[in-house]
Structure formats: structure tokens, C-alpha cells
Length: 352
Image 1: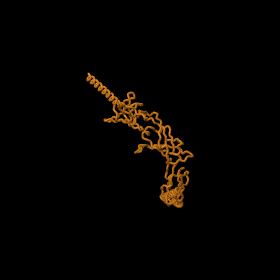
Image 2: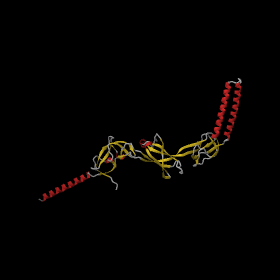
Image 3: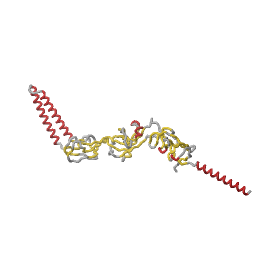
Image 4: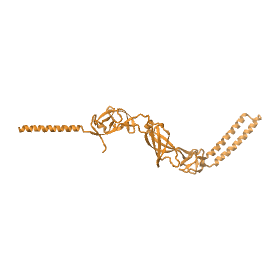
């Protein structure tokens, strides 16, 4: 009887242990894996953008004499404004004045010769060819006089517009060759803002789809300026794949703006008529062995995930465009996607 009781007791203990182990194994199998989730959302409805920009002059020109000569006078204060028509530099005038006097004498001489031959021809002595040759010589002498007078004007260099003297390239001495730059002038009647725009935005927004554009200039961050579109390049930078865009504004009165300083351009685009495109983080996309793309779709009711095939499009500011397979508001796993299995129990990660 004692042996029978001990045997039954041992069997009961073994059964209890077995049941306990079974429950532990079941609990281990159902232990949830912590995952990070991301919501499927519209990725292309952003319409406010900020770009670092560079302040530029409307026009920058190299100032040069159209004739050669020895420099006599220079008035090019760097960093100062000059008025249109103001004398900035002057060559020694004597050689040009002498050329004008010489040309005048030749015109007078050619006129006398033309009159003499014409008089002879009217008496039937000279030929028409002689008259024609004398007329050509007179016309050429007049052209030489015009050129000499023009060169005399060219010996004085004047500001072509109200400008800032950005840099002086010579000093008040030496011989100046034709076309050699002596200074760099900048037209500040308008202030230009140049900045680079990514290809995706150029494709989405035309100049007519920008509802507002403003700029802040470093050093005047408390002042916001309205700016207008000027132009943009049609060929992207081969390295950055960005396009150069230029906006401008009239120069504000009472504010000195130096070309080359930094600025920030803010653009507000009109998204009306642009179809919504869904997107998920690029880390959510998984490639199968057969090169098919899918995501791990999270079911909030069952707390489980399933493999969901998707069709993707281009990148949209850190997101991959989803063309089919998902709906807005759904949640997908965005980290550790390669360690998961279909139907796995998961628990969303929450920041403490």
C-alpha cells in the first residue's frame, strides 16, 4: 500500500512539472518583440521650404579702357558708390588730341583736293574716275577724324551706371592696354538672391505655383523682404543634381547690403492640384530573395505583423513614395525589419 501511494505521488509530481514546463514554453513562444513603428502618411504635401542663399549684385562688370595709353588719373574708391557718368579714370590725353588735330588737317587737305579735281572735271579736263577717287579719299579722312574723336572720348572712363566699386585692379601708374580690366563694378539697383533647389521641387513647383517668397539677410534677421522670381537654370549641377534659382528685390533705402553675404530664402508653394503621394521611411522597405519589395504591416488589434507587398516610387525627402499596397494612417515597422517573421507578435517601442 505504501509503495502504491508513493508511485501515485511521483506520477502526480511529474505531471505537474510537465504542465508547468508546457505553460512556460507557451509563454516564451508568445513573447512580443519590441519594434519601432512609422505611420504611412502623405509625403509630398509639404509647401514651406527654406534655402541658404547668397546675396548677389544685379550685374557685375569689369571696367576697361577701349583704347591703350598711359594712366593719368584714377578715382576708384573700393567699397564706395559712384554715380552714373562719374569720371573714374583718365589716360594721358595729349596723344589722342594730337591724333584729332592730324585727322582734321587730313580732312581739310582731302577737301581741297576734291574741290580742285571737281573743278577741273567740269572743264572737261579731268576724268570721272579722278573725281571718284578724290571723293573716297575725302570720305576716309572724315572717318579717320570721327575715330580720332571717339578715341579721345574713350581715353576718359566713366561709370556706366550707379555702382559699387567692388575692387580696384590697378594703381595710378603704368601703361594700360586696350581691354585690360582696371576695376570691378557692381550694380546694386536690385539685390539678387541665388540658391540651389533640389530636382524634386523644380519638377513639382513652377514659378506660378509659388504663393510667397521672402528673404532674411544675415545681420538683418529682424527684417523680412519680399522677393520676386528672376530666372532659374535648366541644367542641374552634375554633382548635387540641384538647379540654380535667382530671386530679387529693389535695394532697400537706408540699408547697406554687401554682395556675397549670406541670406535665407523662404518659399511657400501652392500644392493645389498636386496629387497626394503616400510615403514610408526608407528603412521600412524590405527586399525579398526574388527582389520583390514589401513592408511589415502592423495590426493594432492583434498586435501582430504581416508581410505586405508594395510598389514604390521616388524618394521624397527621406521617405519612399508608395504607389500601391498601403493606405494612409496604417503603421509599418521602420527598424529591425530583417529579424521579423510573418504573424509575429510585436510590441510598439515607446520612449520613456
